[in-house]
Length: 76
Image (cartoon, helix red, strand yellow):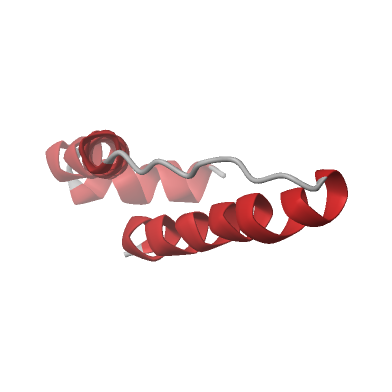
């Protein structure tokens, strides 16, 4: 969800910097090129890493017996 919101927001901020700020500061514009395939790869990588980072601890807890988890909690 965050990635889907970050992409249009990032494009809007980039457009503002290129079309407004750069013109006001330097008097010239830069071309704004978008690369949808690169954005898709980046979004896919971010989602994959997020899922893996959530799945590894979940797998550990799934394999651990409730008795062991309760014993660890009592020791702390």
